[in-house]
Image 1 (cartoon, rainbow, N blue to C red):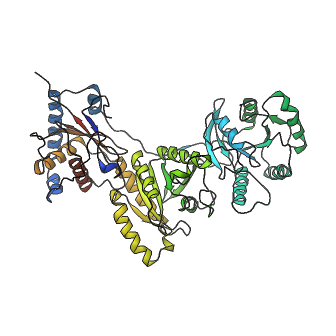
Image 2: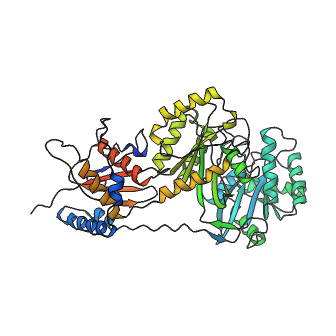
Image 3: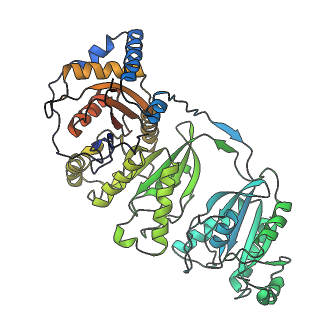
Length: 528
């Protein structure tokens, strides 16, 4: 909303102290805070007549005509807020599940169908672990595309959980696309998958992948031996044959899914973030009431963001499980690097972030970095302290001290103590999420906001700087989600004074769980 061409415009930046740091990208941060004596601002504002406040704000707005405003300023002053949040129901989209052995190119085929690099792909087997759903479209028809991990018989440990998710995907699909590596041919594992598919009684299409040119097509014809009908030679890497295969799939695809849940539109999106192995996937599974995602003691199990619509506290939410964000030294290459990128993208699509912290370990620099990532994105924030059932008295004392020292910049964020493994106090997440989202959506009427500024500056004016005292001419809330305020001023406001304005805003209006952004526009009087 800030006119970046004008050097007099100042945006309160998200510094190390979070969104409310208000340090300003062009400001010299001096670390000084504006200290003011306690006053009765709240009671004075309660006594302000609403109609009178609106009239006064209109007069202040008209007074801006004496100052040099650009088109961006005028557009901002005309802004209105309209955010419909109602839920609505849509027919269940048909589901196409892609299954097969590890490393046959399932995720590459998913990316080819989607037309973008969505699924994490690497030249090593076993990158995908969860069944990940994507919204896709072909020939004007929308459907759900489900990517799965590689299925193997007699798998143990994490691979067994991955295989189980692939089997669930077959049961919850309308059509199945079975991918086989044509260069390798039919293996014993492929024959086991065929048995699974026959028991499921779903329409099955056999895709012979890695047929990059016509010379490799004879190898694909050998896959008739699987007994699934005609093998369709395709190249996920180059796109060869994929369009023809999708045309055939659409003929078998129903208009409305016979197995999928009804699509719920409009639920709030909740991104679950945290370091690896803090319990994000366990939290999603417990909230969903099923083993929706793979959970393992090995750190970094989740790779792709997994969306799941969950009913919690009588409301439908879209929970998004994300990959754990590692230290930067571990992000130089491989699947974990791309998983981290997907996590950042999932955060941008969400409305509120639940940052999961492991109470059995000290709050680390990485935890703080993840919280700062949420603040930079401008999303609402809830802190979930997980593994509370493992907390002893000694660790509890240290934890309180760590919270006081390391999380002082997000004291406004609701805190919930939970155990994702046992489900303890999981229901407390709902009021915390609702509180954070209500704050995130809050809009203060212009009249009230200017009455607040008038009372504040009358009692505690900005200090004189260089023989001049900056004045706030007019204030407006430019946006919500997060609440963003713009102050038209006659001079530069000290970062400490802007932080003071933010603190008083929180005292009066709450804003629990939401960052606040204060922008500043310095404007000069028109020359007569």
